[in-house]
Image (cartoon, rainbow, N blue to C red):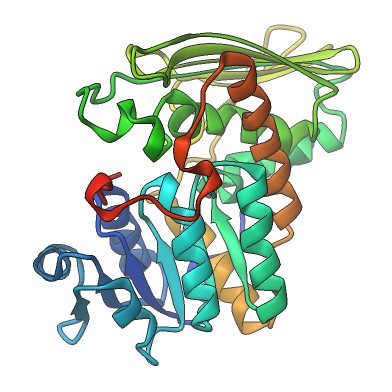
Length: 354
């Protein structure tokens, strides 16, 4: 076996950056924890439409006693000490909030899925380009050591002629009829929360498919409960199953003529990989790390410090292409996001929890 170096740059070597968080939900808690634990960055401000909620978030998740809580997004965006903004609102707000931050002169790291559609993403990136500011989708998996190693091994032909990728992402999520996951206006359904991970992995390894075929089951509210997605790349196939109503074994197999790479569960999180060679030998590739979000944070900090507007690992074009894939799936299933054709949804319809 080629002695591949799976190490990626130490996040602690990235420049320090002062972050503001918009949308203090569950995912933002993890972001705050790992920024403070694994990078030199700081959380200096948190914004919510509910100032008390922002203050509670700071009390629970922020180490800096001087961090400021804001009861509006605009107030945080006016804070000159905030050097970059992490957008952790629901999908349906990403477009509007990211554009507001960019127009306020703030670089943005926007939670996945970056927007509801490729069209919305193009609009956000157009503003970033016009303002000459950094913008990136927070698809954290792309920056993890095992993703880097898998791509290197494929590029060097270690698995032989590639044949297939098989990926599952199934979780029992909150299916409260009044909740976000069941609400098409908020980008609910399995696709943007779960299916985005296998589709982004397919794109990371093989790029844009020649054909996408999707089949699925919708809820009464019109969101996708589960789907199977087949992506054809010439004579290669990438197959995904995603489900928000069942707890699955969330593994991946990357299959070539000379062997396969596999992750048994939670493939999109920091994990060891197994290389199963054609002679049956199993080699464990030690790629598991603590945390995980710190790598995308460090990439953003390095790009911003260098004056770059986008990351080579998670480029604007990559985000647009993956969202074009989700658009195709959505159209085949008949899922419609009512908020897609307008910049924002009414404040009364939106929850900040993710």
